[in-house]
Length: 358
Ligand SMILES: [Zn+2]
Image (cartoon, rainbow, N blue to C red; front, side, top):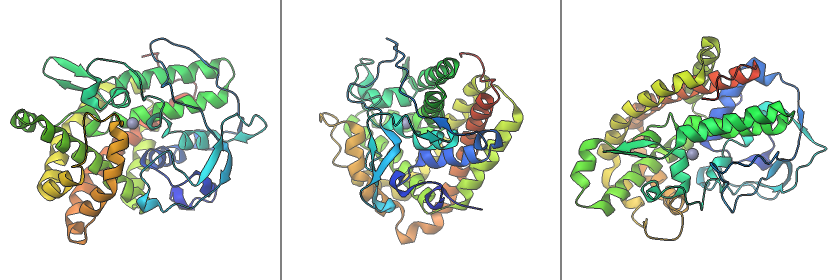
């Protein structure tokens, strides 16, 4: 059976439409027999570990997708908001229900992009990443500064997973691990670990507004592109993730030991992608994000979603189709690495050897 998440009969339509992180975790988990064959676990309440180092966004609520009601059928090709799905989900844990660990890994992997990391005061420089959400999902250097804390977000969630398994709350063990896969995948995403090519930054110093516009346009435009490819059922992306996951699993390496090299490789991949997007789509793509306002009270992520539909039109214009092959190739290489790291992480947890605390 060769299904592609959105046509997998084991996944209820209420959980769709599906987003990039869910596809990534899905193809990784399906490549690991030690994950896919685990028996269902009973849904449990959040163990409520508190840690002053890592507060939860004040507007976040844990939704339980195990208990759902299908209320609509959205068109995946025009869905850009992770919070709006075909189903509505329970606010209280349906403790009588059970669910397979691999499904937990898939359906909660977009949770960190909801309100979990939003509306927090984490750092006086968080405006550079568009707020606290970006701060926890990115890490890059500017001269003399480190911006963002994504590696810490990843380590922290693997720690929560380990603590949950230790007290016998396997449900939240997998759910925290699902959140960890999100941050780990973000760290392999070039735009999350490098701001832009240095020469571009230097050139745009005199016009910071335009600089921010170009940064949002390239970063978000690239995400619009890859998500659309997944939703089309693009075979090269499935293949890259599957091969990467198998390689990561059989390497038996420590995911924390491999983290530094993984981030450096992702960083090195930014310039060619940035240049491709600017050479190919430049003005049109940046114009799609023209309405962005840095000083607006609306969160940057919220604002950019509104521009995504316009960006998709620019990137997937008929005349661009042949050129996209270059971007497909570069992205498949990225996804191979992401699959490898996720495979290492998940196989490690399944075998009870999740590595050090980091
Ligand atoms: Zn993220």
